Length: 80
Ligand SMILES: [Zn+2]
Image (tube, rainbow, N blue to C red; front, side, top):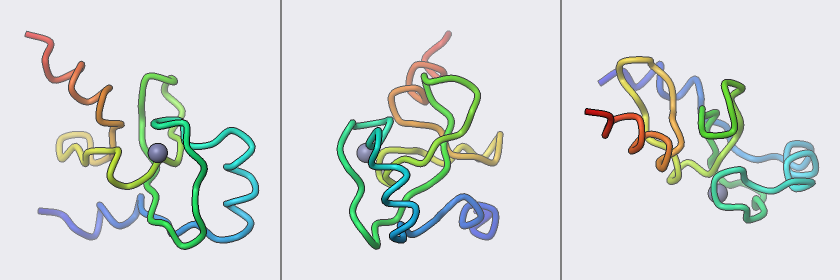
């Protein structure tokens, strides 16, 4: 398990990030972020650009070394 690599994508919401992100809310669940909440930069259905989502809404993909939003992760892994 590569914990160092994983933590690279992790952030804690500060006031500035909060104000910026809450214009749209979380791209994964649509809810607002809260100050001090752990978030991760993840790929998802929204395109190739990584966005910050709540940590529990993304899965760390060891192969690509990055977080993928849960729903998106399931749809990509179930392609068989
Ligand atoms: Zn969320």
